[in-house]
Image 1 (tube, rainbow, N blue to C red):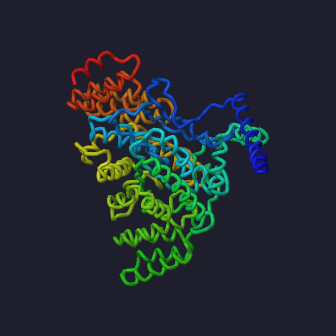
Image 2 (cartoon, rainbow, N blue to C red):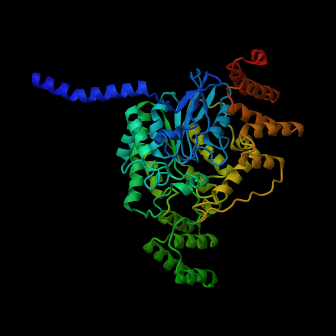
Image 3 (tube, rainbow, N blue to C red):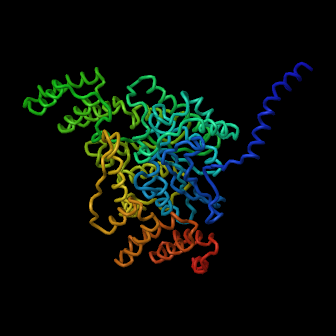
Length: 565
């Protein structure tokens, strides 16, 4: 007995010593906490997401990518009878390049508020560019603490070349388990100080050129990840391991999860990295268009398809897909386009295996599958996802973002989430009321011009020449993208313009967008309520009046109006 007691004491002493050191360091060298949600200084009734949350994954003093989480507000106390959803994912879930109006959170909150006008609706965004399954898992406990009614997930493109991706310059460790362990250690003050000391000893990198490049230009370390290679398999295993833990946590907490398949541009995005076509292949592709006999064309196409399959030649697959597309053979075209993406050595788009994992994990962990990929295929010409719904390799345009949000909305409706749906909003009405202004849409277009002027769309960065504005909204968008006008000023000037133009519909939309972006601003929410009352939408007006009354000081007019409802 004494021997066992001695062993326990001997084993406990190092742990107690480490605990003492950790407590002492926290007292002597307090570190600024970096929670996912922090108190909103403008109104303590709300929490707000930490915009610099990405710094959580880097030592203090390290060069950090310019990736920010757009502010999202949530009440400290969940309202009785309220509906609270949380969105997780990467840049697509966050609405890039348009912002919150196109994001899942923005599109869904607007439509759900019309569906449940008598209930408080909160759709909280935690999605941000470049992150992958490590960040989703890291956020899980803080999301569970919000007591959401459901978590919505759209993720999978960044397992290779996102932050902590297996082929990324921002890789933490060589295995998922070791990376998760390092992320846990980074919460300790002892580990933080050791990392800071190490950073001081390292030579300071020259960030003068890198900071002006896009994230895609900075992130790719492995530019040749072939299909089924060890690095390719590591990306799939990383996604599987992290998502299993994530879904298991939500399942244990009793929180429903809606997880979506991911979509990418197949028909109009050539492979980023592929061997060039040989002279013989170019000649054979040219012959496909010149031969008059259909049987000879098909025989040559079959020969080229077999050659592409045997060699794993991404560009040959893509060019064959274009020929089949021109011939109206959409099924064969899709097969070739999918193989072009599979064989693309630069993995900025998720391979087929990621969607296979999503479908399998949804079934195993009783999550609801949202098949957004099938919705995009069904709404694309010839069933080939391309530029009709996509901006470049994987980000949707506004129509595509609406379709993505509509897929989640339909899934929630089919499951009768939150009970009876008294007023489901038809898609055509929701599209007309989409919470994004023409200025935001044009700003998104300009940001894509910036993105595609650098790697991997161009071999070297090219100067961006923005088109001359042809409308007032485009003038505002250009000033906003150039950093001359902040978002709120852009929207406020639109309000004045629509008021002068007597455009009531756009005035209402813009005032609602501002109020939703600033729930702690009493005057903004009062204005939104007043114009909703003029439109006869009393249920929604009550929501904005209640928001206005949570501010300090609350507008007296809000108190008077809410008593009349």
